[in-house]
Amino acid sequence: MTNEEILQGLFDNTLIGNAPEVKDLVNAGLEQDMEPESMLYDALIPSLEEVGARFERGDFFVPEMLIAARAMQGALDILRPLLAETGAQQVGTYVMGTVKGDVHDIGKNLVNIMLEGAGFTVHDLGVNVASSSPTSSASPRSSRRPCRCSRRTSTRSRRPACATT
Ligand code: B12
Image (cartoon, rainbow, N blue to C red; front, side, top):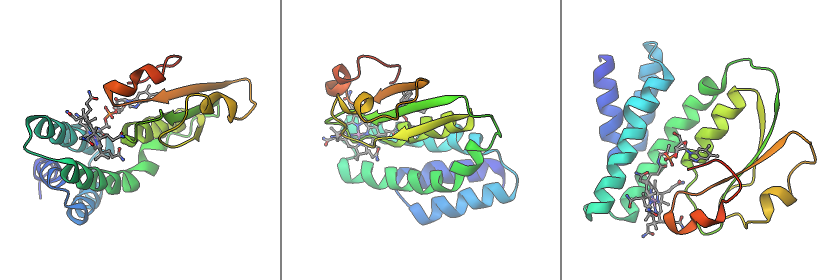
């Protein structure tokens, strides 16, 4: 298979939530030395964007979004150690959480991987986190940075004090 075929396969199979095939394609890509970042940014994320566009048009519903997300998560399980592997020195701590009312966590998990790769320790409080939690239950280290994530417009007001999306 060419790299292009693998990218196309990753896009198509994430779109339809075919998790076993997505895993096989990620492994095939790695075996032929494809960059993990390329699989992520050239196929997996664009596929989820297409899922979102179809959902917006009414062509996809929540179950389709859910199985696509699961396929993406399976790919990330394989790619995580490779994306995080930079050997950077520990430089600080982030406390991460998706705000209350929001369960979207793929982007957050991806940011966690990047932060860990850049040398930060990440305390991940998970999803649906009440606004007081990130700062109150965080480790007492002075270098910690609280980060609240939200992916829904209706939950954005719950992440005032941090950079996110
Ligand atoms: C997968 C998905 C789901 C899955 C989530 C599974 C999971 N474990 O995350 C499920 C099926 C559960 C879901 C549910 C819903 N979803 Co949804 N979902 C999506 C979808 C298709 C992909 C999101 C995703 O993971 N993208 C890939 C990641 C990598 O991208 P990302 O999140 O943007 O993250 C990147 C950046 O934003 C940034 N980033 C992210 N977090 C952080 C944090 C920090 C600190 C920083 C610095 C950066 C950063 O870095 C990331 C990497 O580049 C989007 C469509 C889209 N276009 O995004 C809709 C979308 C987000 N969902 C949407 C909706 C409406 C819903 C529901 C309300 C549907 C419903 N009727 O029930 C529910 C809400 C449930 C809830 N209470 O939260 C809407 C939101 C619209 C809006 N403006 O509010 C979207 C945009 C779809 C659409 N076009 O309408 N969803």
